[in-house]
Image (spheres, rainbow, N blue to C red):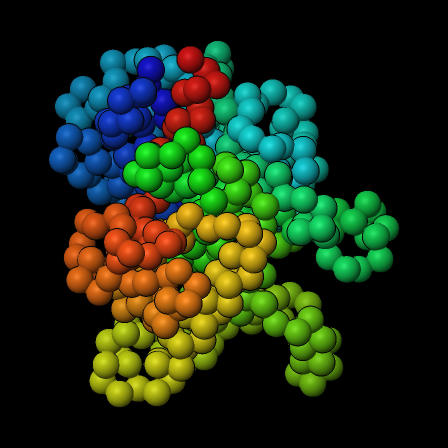
Length: 393
Ligand code: AMP
């Protein structure tokens, strides 16, 4: 079955076509700057990449162009769009309604709309993608795969905030967690590598956004992101955890609106805020190596926060089989992995420096270590394709 995966943002559409169950990628691409004077379109198939600049007024026009590219007589991979057997849509917020991926019907659409107030930037954009896709593929089943879905197994004591209980009922204030498709995918891959049907694993997704999950026998029991993706780790531009009183204190001191402070915490903080150089870990490492102390401090703070979460999740899991690193930083940066995991032999964590520095090694702990340290590449699109295929086959 050919599965089209769509990740629709407010001004972009990321797409990928998989041949399932083989999991091979037939075509992929990206449209950016939808609605602007000039939009960028990228399409790749069979090692050929096409890049076009053209005006794309809205998501419907964007989807039409994607279908045109996919069926193009020269570079296309389909004769007819109806060869697409199913479509998987990435949906950011599924609230408490969705514990896993589901076929999208009118009730599901209504729920995604209902949760838009918790994810005002993403859910409406995800819905736009669904509607645009429906215009061309009326009879093709569509599946919604939620970033929050995998984390819905968290127990009450982990997902509630210690605010008046009624706020949970009235305003849906609780921890939901995000990056669920990634945590689920790398967990399943790790179990295959470990040769176990199930295991207790701490999955560290460290990219520009970052989150950690404690997964016990296949079920998430805690995760670092909360009501929104702002909570938890220090990220490229997000602060992660901080004393909530800072919000009211700074609003008084700086005379800023809620939106302005929200922007500061989400877009001007984290690695960028501390270093005042960049949100990009590669740049910070280069700067640190040149002796820049702010860059070094930002990296140190980043690693220290991850260590603290790992420690608390080892307690939450009671027994840990593996600690896994994924995402742009987790997969590619041995230096950061080393800082996070060094000097923890007492807890059964022992880094093998040679393996840590070798690309392609999935296990980088010493053979003697009680807890395996792992690197597994994430693939959120493939995770969505797998769910979509399993539901629609
Ligand atoms: P992602 O959001 O998963 O694409 O990850 C983006 C982050 O990964 C950025 O901070 C990059 O600097 C970082 N990254 C990607 N490749 C490397 C690398 N080879 N070494 C260090 N950091 C990397």
